[in-house]
Length: 93
Length: 382
Image: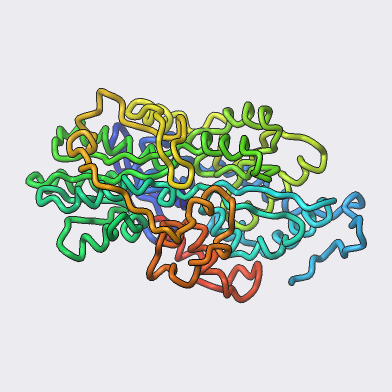
């Protein structure tokens, strides 16, 4: 139930108030989403949508920074296995 | 899809798995709090990949599952009234009450409608002035902004035929009960990313200090889950217990201030009974007195009929992490998704349903196998 899905803001329909809403696209599927809690989202920003309302604007810079760090993740010497298990690549069970 | 596909990258997952295996000098026991995370861990086979290294205890973060039987019986009672249409999320419909589910009641003529959002129930009330529309409001902090918004919209539209049957729950009091339980072997928590998207994680600092347990705010995709587990293991291996945020693309420390303001305006903290836990102090949210006109429990009080729990169902033990679903004698025998005894076998976030569904998964961490992934998620969430 706490599932929330990222979608791209395509256009604002109503900017203010309790009925603020925007057209948001999820992998080609468009939906009207209430934007009361994400008033700062711009067109082309991604928002996380749960139960018909946007609950956060995805921070694109932060996402890129973390993905870059993950892409560079290497097993270093400190990570040598302590009990003779093979370190990398992990074998699939 | 952007912000989903890149977090299902098998090569990154393998590297994270390697890092966790190399870093763990012993077996650690972590709890993922949210039922969505439980499903992710089983769906991607992460529990198997880390067998013997990281034990994952499944937390109570399935709102449908912790909703007390009294509330489900009350919802069914309301749905049976000629003047009421009971609306809720699809997950609630098949949850067994003392005598049948909302779906069973609908089968014999009760007014029950699935809505995707509580604000859709407000629209229904505006279209159907001769019916009273009740929204059965279940959910953790992730869902409360949408429910609060529905109340504010109904008020702005001047609707008098809309109300909420509120069964909202707060996650941290339940985490405190678990952490304080001497039989609970949890050494670190993966906190629920979407709850923290709304409320932030500042309150978890005191929790981590008090119980000397690491807390890592974690997302839902396999890369997110593995990065959360790695951060937790890193803390445990270095003897730290602090709050990390591994879901920083969505979660800020202060949460979403607009959403928090909206919720605070409509709801106040209350004690609430949880299935499997009993009464949880400060474990729920109730409408503030000025919004009582929108309280279905005030408008249509529950007839005090006895509540009947099925004796074989051990959902309470599953929810509190005391047993895993296959340890229940009814699991897969007298209790299946088609004929569930308890909510965890019904809900898309229930641990029993996750074990049942992924019991025969084909390969671990094969992100293309098993189902049609992204499109399924989009359907479920939108």
